[in-house]
Each structure stands twice: as structure tokens, then as C-alpha cells.
Length: 345
Image 1: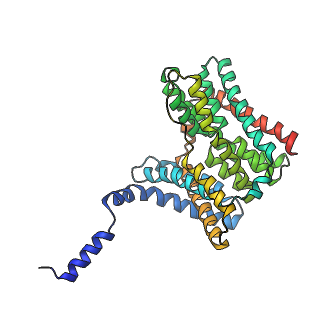
Image 2 (image 1 turned 45 degrees about the vertical axis):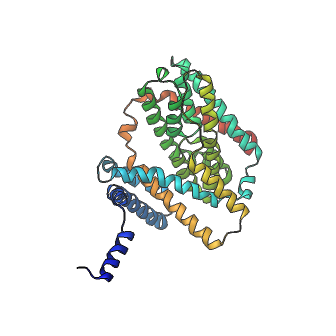
Image 3 (image 1 turned 90 degrees about the vertical axis):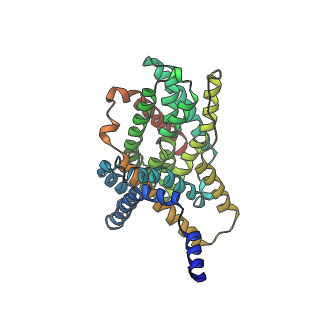
């Protein structure tokens, strides 16, 4: 017969023990999380000692471990880091950005973001028709370049009627826009520095032109913290326009369109935390810890993104299949450069 104290201890242990669901989650995710965190720590160490951006190290080192992306022990953890931790890190960036930072941009650059998005969508449809493709495919490729890369491609594909779009078209768009965004992450900071842009202008250009949020964050903070903050804010302006684009697509194909058009949770969180940062006095120590946490989460996410990046897979569809997306990418870049020369320089 058990002693009362022993039964109490057993009951207490049962209450505080992890649930089977949590244990199963930890078992399936720990390998990928451990790999991503290890790469992030190594990248941070190299960045401190060699002066290069930690996120660039994280991307390159992660790509060397691409063979681990499909392993059952690491696959789910890597996906968790590259998606959930990335979005959490971006959401926490809201506590870094003040209204003073945003005011440095001014109203004109914000209007420029909207104008470039609209022109890129129109260009996507026009280029698609020149290549003999459908309006739906043009909206898919143009929208993915104009808004937020693969995420926008999947969202737009969910709204477009299936009879106008093949699964191969969606896959090609996701692969192509990811390839262009990865190349842009490395090339654009160098290009904008060559053009003589200051940190604020470089951050705006990065946020206005690179497709995926992860690559915008990586490219922006590879220039400076100021450029990273402005790039993230500018990028989230584009992401915030996704529901508008989805509703427009649904109207164009209103007879058969479906799907929802809500803001992603991390964009909402970013906006809320930015409001808190500017309206509520917060201790400097708390802001410092949150900023450090956010930065490390982003390095971990970029590490996982690197592990998921296979150059062979990115270019598997062939060069011809990427031409249309590349044209859309260059069209957006050209618009941004013209805009910068007229309004920013």
C-alpha cells in the first residue's frame, strides 16, 4: 500500500509531467531545431570574429547541410524553424521600430510601394500573355514577385480557379521565386551599396524588391540594423497588401474563386507590438532582451532556410522555366531604381 506522501508526490509529478502530445512534438522536432540552433550559434561566432553578416554565414552553412532536410529526424524541426520561428522573430521586430523610424521614410516611399506592387501585377499579366500564358498564370507569377514570394504564390493559387492553373505552374512559381529571392538576398545589398544608397534608402530598396520575408530580413540586416528595420517594415507593407490582392483576384474570377483574405498573424503581431512600443513606456532592459531574442530567432530561421535550400532543386525546372519570373523580378528592381533616383537620391 502506497504511503500518502508518496501518492501525493506521484500525483504532483503527473500534473507537471509533459503531455504525450508535447513529448511526441519534441521527439519529432528536436533534431531539426538542434541543427538550426547549432548553425546559428556557429554563424554568430564567425560573424563576431570575422566581421561578416551572421545571416549570410547562416544561409551558406545551412546550404551545406541540405542533405539533412529530408531526413525524418530533422525535417519537421527544420520546417518549424524556417516558418514559425521566422514569423515569431519578425513579429518581435515590432518592438524595435518607432514612429520616428517610419517617419524617416515619409509618405512618398509608402505610396511607391503600392505603385510598384500594382505595376508588377500588371506587368506579370502582360509578360505572361507575351509568353503565351494565361492571365491566371500572370497574376500568380506577378503577385508572388510583387508581394511575398512563395507565400503569396500559394495564397493566390488558393484563390484562382483550378481549371485556369496547373499544379506544375504553382510548383514552378514557388521554385522560381525562391531562387530569384535567394539570389537577390546576396546580390541586392552589393548593388545598392554600389549605387551609393545610405542605410535607410538601402533598407527601403531591399524591402521593396526582394520577394520572401526571410531573404528581406537576411539582406537588410547584412547591411546594418537600421537598414534591417526599414527593410522589414517596408516588406510588411507589401505583405499587408496581400488580402487586397486576393480580394481583387477573387473579384476577377468571382464566379469560381474561393479562399480567405486575412492578414497573416505575424503581420498583425508586428503592428500590435509596434503600437505598444510607441504608446507604452517599456524598460530598456526588456527591449534589449527582446531585440536580442528576435535577432537570434531570425538567425536560426535563416539557418533552417539554408538547410532547405537546394540549388539543384531550385534550378531543376530549367532556365527557360525561370525566364518569366526573372523578367518580373528585374521589372520590379528597375521600378525601384527609377523611383530611388527620382525621389530618394
